[in-house]
Image 1 (tube, rainbow over the protein chains, first blue to last red):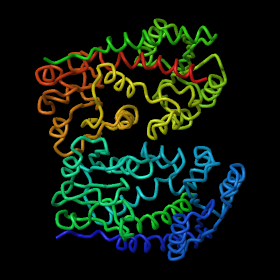
Image 2: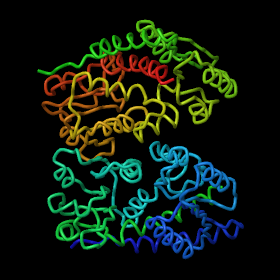
Image 3: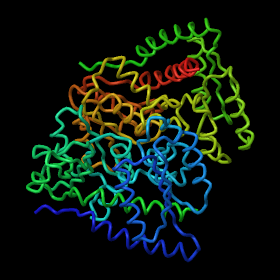
Image 4: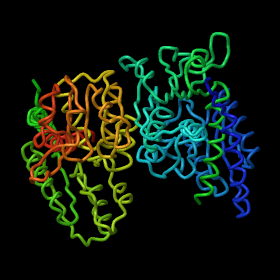
Length: 281
Length: 281
């Protein structure tokens, strides 16, 4: 029997813990607050913003929205970032990217104070993840994978964990976080020779490639734990992961569903980071 | 027959190339210059300084030595770093660490201008390695491993490379550099289950654990390429690597010796970084 690692279970536990911590902060007159900075009206951003706002409300975290026109200049956006950096009533900042073409992504990312960089976009946050030190925050999606493994008590020490995908948002940071938990980590990708064999040998397989149903039967083995980070729209307009769920259900020990898996936990991690940022002060 | 990947061969090729580039810089009135900042008189530091100075002379790179008393204060060292940062006649800075206890390592490391951070000690350099962008420089030892693999034309694409050790100076950065060359990279360590099996399955094995002769017969397989980063003193007072060379010689396809392997290449990489720093201006 394959266990379905439902995101909702992880989120329920996380939210309960975060509500308590929010209460404790409020007793000290700290009102944990997320600022969302959005440039333009990309549908993806608005949808994520809606989910994040709702999750903040559930937990008791305030949200300030700063919506800028798609034609905003770099200097205008830098001024906005400087303001949120200075504003002591704001603890965490979510800045949607990719930004329109007039922006220098490197300059914008690193203008954000690492202390408020709750989605791990600044160099300081990346160093924190790479060096395993508390500077900034890891990207929320990478940490969501770790929260799921922790919630379901998946033993990581010494285990063969294969991370399929090597992006700066998921693959590389989650590899470093797994290493910090003493897993043996393999980073595999499109150029890997015998990729299916490498994946099949894993105790735990984390897939973040962004290709619908790419991981099929031949990549999978009994007892494996699969974390599917992909969110893709298939030819029928349905949301599906990077892993063929029907194949996985016949074979593996446990898998996160899409939707309802990593994505839903990511939103709670975002709020967790706002609260951690407020607690660090 | 096991091929011995002699560092001297790599260094000869590197030095010839670097001499040409130094000449080209001098034609443009740029005199590539390394500043060595040493606090105290640790024997290791002095020995490395001697080697680096000699290599710089061979290639035609100038060296400025700044030797400070072991009782130097943090503010005094910061002032020295500010001076070398500002001094346009200095292109690269080697700052010996670990520093005496009165220093905050994080503050000192990050005071150094990333443009002159030729041994990859600053956060900016670490981000460069993690994100595969040109910011600062990778640690010299990690890059020396890559130079050896390149010199001996070892194919990396898709290959199963196991990095044994996960330090910020070798294991993690070399893993990222291998990934950038499209290798499939496994980071293994003391907690890895069936470590010998994991190592034996590798096409290429990079060992950086700092334990004399730890990697013995059962870790090794025919055709493997072994890069031995370790430099240890054994019970007879002899320099030995992390890999049992006698065992390896009977089994593997190629191996770097200790001494005369990675260490000697590291010194040339240091000089290469000084020249790259001068070329970037």
